Length: 485
Image (cartoon, rainbow, N blue to C red; front, side):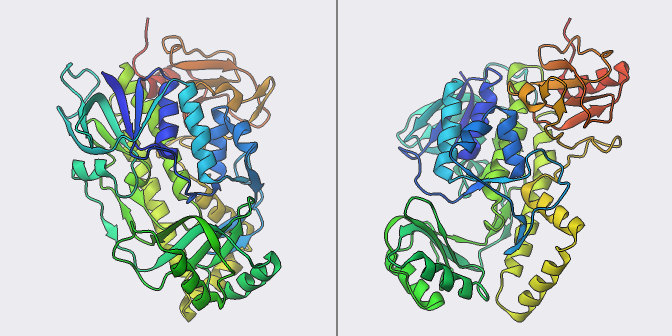
C-alpha cells in the first residue's frame, strides 16, 4: 500500500512530497494536468520560504534562476525600504516565476524517490477509519477514485489541489468566508509599445488605481494586471485577449499593443478558510485549505510553509514514532497562521480601493510605516518571519524559527538538510540518547546564540531552550515520541 497520496502537483504538493521522502515515506503525487502549468500566478519566495529552501539545501538552485529583492512592508501597494534587524540571516526575497519553482521542487521530489503521476484526476475518495493513531489495522486507509475509473489506496492522503479542491469537497469540510466583490485580469503577453511609454503610463495610472500594472518577465513578455469590469459568474473561464485590450483602454487609455499571450486568467478577492485541516487520515494544505487575494504575494509561500510544517509530522505518524497529538498540531499551528494571512489580505484590499477613505487610510499607514518598528512588524507579517507557534510559557525563542546562525564549524542550516530534529548544544554536557534515530546532536558554539542549548524541530522551530537534561528529555518525548533502547 502507498503510505501517502498527495493530490495536486503544485508547489505545496511537491514540497510536501520532498519532505516525506526525506523520511523514507512511500509517496505518490497525483496531478490532473498532463504537464506542468505554464501559468505563473506566484512570482517569488518571501524570506521565510527562502530560509526553508536553505535549510533543505535547495537555495543555490533557486538563486541560479532568481533575482533577489528587498521591499519592506509591501503592504497594500505601500513600498518602503527594507527594515533593519529583521530576525533572519536571509534579509531578502527571491523573484522566481512559479513554473521555475515547480520545476525545482519536482526535480527534488523525484531525486528523493517520490512518484509523480500526471493526467490523474481524483473524482472521489473514502476512508475506512477515523485515522486515530498510527496503530490502526491493515484495513485502515484512504481509497481514491480516478476519472478513468481506477482506484488507489494509501494510508494517508493530503489534498493540495487548490481552491476548488475536490478533496475538501469530498470530505464535506466547511469553507466559510466571503465571495469575490472585485475581479482582476492577469496574464503574460507581449507588447508593441516601447518600455519607456509603458512605464510612464503605468506610473500615472497607479496614482489612483493600484490594482493595475505591468511587470517585465525578462523573456520579452510582460505580466499585465488590470481591474475587470465586474465579477464574472464563472472564473474558471479564462478572459480573452480582446477583453484584456478593452479593459486596458478603459483604465489606461491604451492597450499597449498587447499580443501573443502566453496565458490569461482572472482572480477575485474571495477569502475563505477550511474549518478543519484534518479529517481522519485526510489532510488539507495550501489553497485547498485557504484562499485569499494575492496581495502581498503570500499565497504560494503560505502553502509551501504548510507543507514544511506537515511533512515531518505525517512522516512520524507513518513511521510509527509520532507522539500523541503530533499530527493534530498541524491544524493547531497552521490554521491560525492562515487566518492571519486572510485578515491582512482583507486589509490590503481595503487599502487598494479608489475611494477617498481608502486613499486617506493608505496615506496614514504609509506615514506610520516610516517608523522602523512598524515597518519591521509589517514586513515580518508579510514575509512570515514573525510567525511564532504557541508552545506555552518559556524563553522568548520558544516557538520561533531559529535563524541560520553562524557556528564555529559552519552554519546551522547546513546541518538540517536531512529534515531531522537537532539539538544544538553549546555546553557539551547534554545527550539525545534514545532519540538519536530522529534527532541529531551537534556540540558547537555560536556568538549569535546567548543560550546554553536549543532543541529544534525538523521545521526549524525552537521546541526547548535550557541546559537541564531531565527537562530536555521531557521535550524530546513530547515532540519526538518515546525513547528507544
